[in-house]
Length: 606
Image (tube, rainbow, N blue to C red):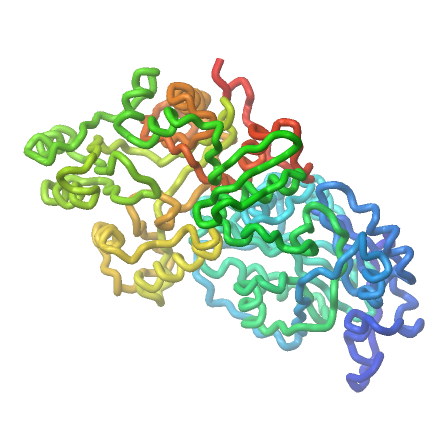
């Protein structure tokens, strides 16, 4: 790669032909006159960690471009932009390359209008440490993006002037909740067009902070504008409607620039024909399994898209799955998970701590139990996705209402003492605790403008977009009562920066968020989950505990889920662990970065 340099100034002239200020970057059908490109560096390639950015306008011919693109390494995703005649390159080497189905958007910095009235609670700064680079990767993975080599990110930040990494920090938690990358073309290769580009905009889907993506884009734009850059480009997938809406709101417009990528396993969904087996109709929990299987060359046959049933075949092995449930889980194990009363008894006999509880009898004894323990959780003995559960019942009328909500007289209902702490899900696959995550109830953050009802609606739409429609906040009596318990009414305006919990349970399907805590999970909690799974005799399960501290040994067991969502543990890759269990002879894609694996000694039973 050529060394960075200063951009030459283009003469002022009418905006036509090669005198257009962006003529070189947006004219792919002609070679630029030599006098315009004499100072531009040749064959410029930028290593981004997740792949390479290949600047096509700096290459003299397709043969050299082909040679460079062929050097793409496994687990990376290179992209070539601004090349001359991209369709000719692809037509010449159709087995190797394809036109990226993305749009290129551009904004002229002189047209940009800044905005400063963003809600408090989020700060943005340049990447400051290797630890923040690791946190950037966690956000990438949560957004379904290719993670980057942390050493490359940190080296680019420390040693170059042409790459800018911005991170958004939640000021309450100190967590990185968003990131964006900027590349200064003028500094990188003396771009005659004096341009720059935006890459890898990502916002943690679990964050409830509004406007993070917009603030990141604006901050980057303002930095490049202050350097005197002429325009900012970005590439966005053609079907990413929320991102496109944001960019057009900010004043970006489409330009005739196409990208070329190499055909590889990561890019397969972008160039290969969509499977005919209703793969597109699977829910996110089945689709993540199907995608991991397909990446390994395992045949996927969708049996029932609505139900999530598939047949996976590799060599002579064939296994039917329903999301993370497979036919390797026995009916006995399923029955033990199905009835929470049975689950409690089985795991308690194995030494797992369970809360004090009783089966509802719908008489005075239920109320006497409430008097004894003061606060209870009421839930159906059978059920999932948080349906019929009421948390924090303290009054007798509340108890009657909660019992009715759980099914009423004649149904099987469990009443348990409410235990303090956070809702922890530990995922067990084949005798190992492979991931742990804290699940938190849905919350909204006030901006001093919108009512609580409007904030809930906006947050619900964000959660739905981030989870493929699986997570939304119901506008029901439970939400209204939870808001009321917080001292508010639905049509009141929440003050700026004020955070309000709007659901009692941390279930994903009712708007709850999930936060990976595998790195800090106390060994005793992992052992408790493994003892519970072993007692139930189930190979794949989600064990739910209530814990005062994730890094402490204390807990109470809540329940075991025989079909845990594997899409809810990013940046961990439990779908990979699941396919390893089903088809141990196959191997996953070797990403440039992986989160540290749990300690095998602490996360397996002795």
